[in-house]
Image (cartoon, rainbow, N blue to C red; front, side):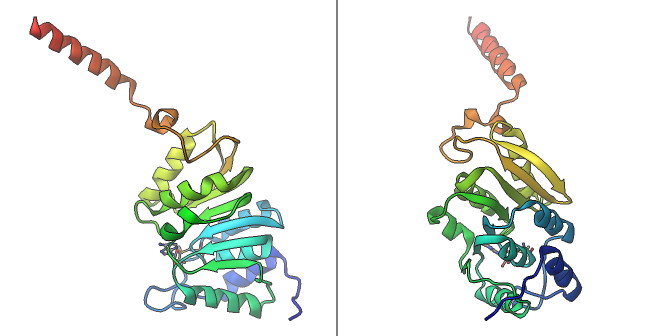
Length: 227
Ligand SMILES: C[S@@+](CC[C@H](N)C(=O)[O-])C[C@H]1O[C@@H](n2cnc3c(N)ncnc32)[C@H](O)[C@@H]1O
């Protein structure tokens, strides 16, 4: 099939005027839980064409990443969502031959996922504890240094904790921007950024200073009482 050339901005306009429905718990195609248009606009302006990308969850972001990437991995459990997205892409002339859609939960897939040198990761699948952390833990080291990690739904406690954690990891991650409730971070370290790091090397896990002094005082008190 001959594919028409379509720009990221044109595809965003189409998505947000046509409002195709890809989601739905009972029946895929009955709902849309699409990411906010300003988030996709930011991605369209900042993710270079020809990128190597991955997302957990799927939807409008998948359409945009399909257009921007040379290789894209989508992990989400419902094959019907994937079918609807491919059909919509085909109807709009968006080539999706380079997109691998894995119809399983990301928790089951990411621990053994083979991919490397990612330019961009979007975490927007299951938001229940601890799914976003599993997504992050098993994919973050596959991101290139300088690559971008997006954490969606930072108003949900799981997304918020992940954002708060990454903010404290300032030798490994740098916040690029928050667009509404989506946080974009840049990987800045060539050392591991997720795996094989012990808790004392993570600022987020630092014990409050006062607790150390309290422990010393309590120990002193106990020692004095014994005398
Ligand atoms: C909020 S929607 C994603 C919105 C999408 N980024 C967009 O722009 O339209 C959440 C997605 O996560 C998927 N999902 C649900 N449970 C999941 C899981 N355990 N692993 C991966 N994806 C999951 C849903 O099927 C749905 O596609």
